[in-house]
Image (cartoon, rainbow, N blue to C red; front, side, top):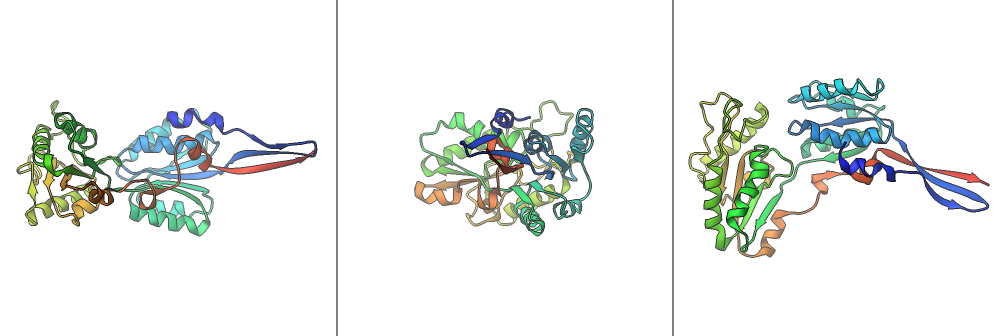
Length: 326
């Protein structure tokens, strides 16, 4: 159970609103009932843990619908949960994408927690609207980072690529989708980044020195191959030579990490969430100009609702006032 929920459940207690000689009013939070949790394939346990813990701690039941690309994780967790929880509390239902629309439109569902793309999130919300179900959406983003003139380049280069590029092969929802580097240090920073990226080995599980594995599934691999092909087709410069061609001798969905030098601002590579090991780097001179493309917040197309903490716990409850006449 994440600490953000574990440390706050004690605050979800019955509150005294009014206590007089005439009346006593309290506010309590009651469970919604049955919920549905639909999770993406990139972090099947972590993404589920936040949603499921909020549901369990507030007394709800749920159906966990994992991605068809990563069903085994959910099935194993469900098997373990069945040893300690009553039947019908922790349910796992794996299958094709057809299950999602059926679950979200079911009249017996009170709350839906979804993590995935903006396009699918809109369909989930539309389905929930038909039955007025509560819905939480954690959707895509296009996060960027601004690199300023006073940065320590040697210290920053590994950090800016390591956390999202190495450990998740670019599939983290929090990953930088673009770097905006100040023009006076652009060339030096780009060269240092290219050197670092080319030290990363891409191999299968049998190579002890490898830090980058394959893309998780064929669907995402195909989308990324299209981006790599556009880089070659449109003649964009890359700071990592030959890395736009995927290695052919690995026998899997492997792609070399690629740094693209100043692609067009309006290109798909910059405007869309890549979800892979390809990183556009762009130049800026005026911080006022670079602000709008970077964007801030976790609202609008980035998502809806709250998953964790006290507000996340309340999202799985209905407030109920009790009025007692003395």
